[in-house]
Length: 337
Image (tube, rainbow, N blue to C red; front, side):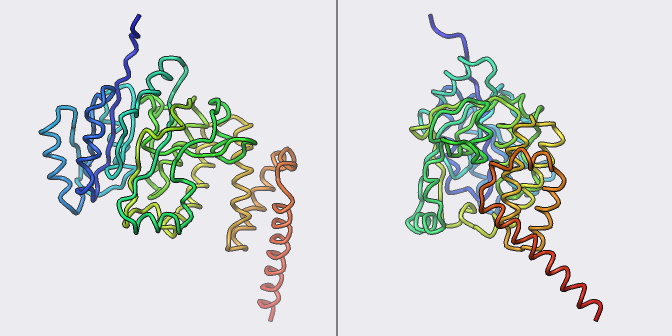
């Protein structure tokens, strides 16, 4: 007996500086049976992407074009948020304008949503397409080679995914990409939208929140279901840009988890990783002060997690604690003189 379940997806594509890639992205999605609509959010692109987007809207009934009300540039996060608000389908998927779907994109997703009534989202593997040899060389020289296929290295129950994404799972590691996740539109009422204060890593920020508050099931994690495009001007390989926002990324996650009352066990996992992040910062005075403040603020969690912190963590903590006090003592002596 044929299944009555129908997966109908709104695919959201932020459009900025994407004239060279947009048509391929749209055509990779428009012929898929599960795609109900493709929402293009034009973000004041400096190239000819707006004109191309208008042509695609005329050519394909599924394509709908929008701009921000003030017609100014707001970034990928704000554009995805606008797309979510405009979406009319029950399910949401994302696609960057320089990336593209593969024919198997929603095959496993449909089966998983149909099988699990409590499923809020499905994540699948994403491969990498290099638009030039220069882009490929840069990708590997910057140390991103391990991410050539974004996927998890094993099947993970939803309740364990949070630990995996924060590298606290004993056996399974990995990550999933923006182009490989499909979620119910209703989850955004529960966890909120993309954090527009972050210019980079907004997607990873959202996936951590999804893993903390929702049931995300594994889809196709062996064979890629989409490809992300890497080119010479791709912001992914700009390490300085990532470093600029990483502290805000951690602090905003902490605020989200605390304000929305994430489960205690998951909050402990997050704090362990947050403490390790603070201990590893190059600016030792600021890093150690923040670390000490947080450890003293959460003594119970520190006691519970003591065994999880390795020797090197406590070695760094003690060394930096001593360094901080020596610097403080030296500064007081200077002031007295």
